[in-house]
Image (cartoon, rainbow over all chains, first blue to last red; front, side, top):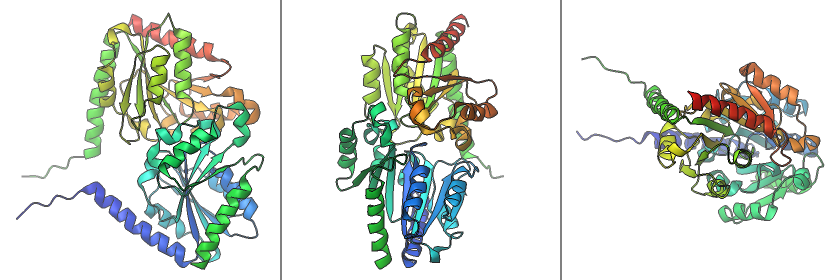
Amino acid sequence: MTSINVPIIQNILQANDFVAEENRKIFSDHHIFCINIMAAPGAGKTALILKTIELLRGSVRIGVIEGDTASVTIDSDKVVLAGAPAVQVTTAGDCHMDAMMVRKGMEQLPLDELDLVIIENIGNLICPAEWDLGSHSNTLIASIAEGDDKPWKYPNIYRNLNAVVVTKTDLLPYVDFNLEHFSQGVNILNPDVDIFPTSAKTGAGLDLWTDWLLSQIEAASRA
Amino acid sequence: MTSINVPIIQNILQANDFVAEENRKIFSDHHIFCINIMAAPGAGKTALILKTIELLRGSVRIGVIEGDTASVTIDSDKVVLAGAPAVQVTTAGDCHMDAMMVRKGMEQLPLDELDLVIIENIGNLICPAEWDLGSHSNTLIASIAEGDDKPWKYPNIYRNLNAVVVTKTDLLPYVDFNLEHFSQGVNILNPDVDIFPTSAKTGAGLDLWTDWLLSQIEAASRA
């Protein structure tokens, strides 16, 4: 009898990836475009989601899966107030969401009545990087106030992105942030990624972001 | 023969805590006060450390252990430029520092010639919470730009703090941040914690922060 060496971590990731692939297929079967939004704490994920719901109201039916480490419903309450169905998934202190949490969230959403599902991931620039949730797109949100060196300091999460939304550009006059330096860091890791400078406060740049989102949703609906 | 069930996670933490206790004793034997600074990415840890080095120059000898997920020396280079010995410890993608990493950093610092060692932890509001590094004090840095709801959303890291430094207060006129609401959240978890609103840009409030630090260093030097 030979001993069998089972690489445990790899197995957990394989199970996650298996569920993630199924999630993606369920979304696709419902002609839903699913986007995973990642960011540092306080980058403005919720503010961007609320603005997106407001701007696409009447044309796109949006559902939100809210990841939180604690069982506070601060963010999901805001989303429901904005008129979109929202499910909160609590990680109980864990530092990232996984595909199974998304599946549990999906089961609570009226998928037949949605065009876009937004996953608001845990505020964390490290741990979510390795976990496929079953989304079609990974978007990273970066606040002007965080500084322009983050792609260099957190390269893992800045890899494999489809879009980067730079938030709080209304603060540009008051903080040191060089958009060119930041974009250079993003593009070293993702040569073809779209970068959208925005301000949820003034509304600047949000049209380009929603245009990109609409084009992705349209492609998903035709698939 | 009975089977023995070893709780693996608990054992890893026990080893970490063992090394952490040793680290703390080594610091104390050298009459060094050691502070662990935690924060979200971009909260202004490095800016606060640089300002602290500048303000205490000539009266306090400071060494810095810089935690980074990637092997970029952006932060440690800045600290060395500011005139303090700095050691960079890279976690190779891992989401927190542990006591062993601090030990490796300590071995590179001239402990006999220092009064204060600052550990700049990984930018992460979740994972560092559970890891004792062997510091005497845990300080959390929170940027005004992150929003005032973070103690409610990341309670684990907001527990067991000795001080909270609120940074970037120069942005108060431009962002929605209620200091009273924030402080209430901090104090629910830590009734006796000191909260220092500061701006590294204008210098506001830094005197109260360095006064607090000096009193802690003095107490450690007498111990």
